[in-house]
Length: 91
Image (cartoon, rainbow, N blue to C red; front, side, top):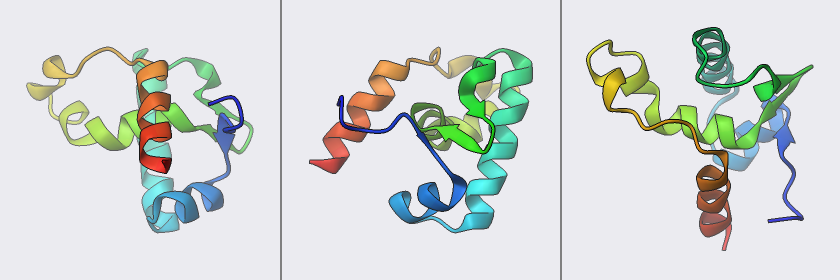
């Protein structure tokens, strides 16, 4: 896990996770909204870099986070769990 970067650009996220650049941009916009709501810290997006665990968490829970009733069922953000998931997927 030490060798993995914690932040990526939108283009790198797009290539790494096999999603289009517009999809990454929409998810980043959603992450910005969640920063305002307090789910993620202000360091989730640093300049033009996006925190990978935050991106993974948002990608996993975005539909539930955008539904006012299902939002209550989303577990709190855990960056260690998100990074462990990334390590499992990469192996």
